[in-house]
Length: 203
Image (cartoon, rainbow, N blue to C red; front, side, top):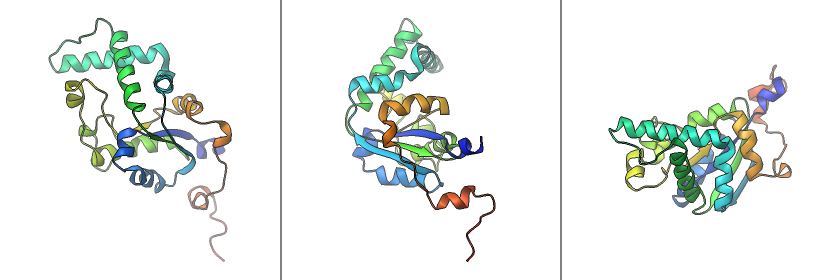
């Protein structure tokens, strides 16, 4: 059980806007300095089908939920959703997201460590950059908003995808990485973070 806590995995993808704005090093640095361990990394251009598969790991339930959230967002702005059902709205979001993710090179990574999913989500910030906290990657490094994305009829450009839960990460990782691409190695910093007695520090 303890070993599992130390070795939780999460998937992070630097999306095409993050690559094109030359933010790869800055983004990686933000995660790396927490003490999380980078165990897999690749640069690739996803196909549209791969992007759809990635977003559909939540299945039909994801389509319904994302469509419902969008409908609520329309209502809050005093507008009516242009889609007849939540699912139709969800499909439209899926297609916009897949188009965005497959529009150019991305950097896919797996980070390992205690509470890796939660730590990465905290550092990354909320889905909408405009309302993300100062100090988060999205809050500090980009300016997009739901309003602007909606007016341009496109997916919000928020630099990064980060797994929402450990279970989601387990489903997403095989889409991007083969098992042999996930490295197992010792990082010296892990001794400071996880060793119970801090043995070996003093000579």
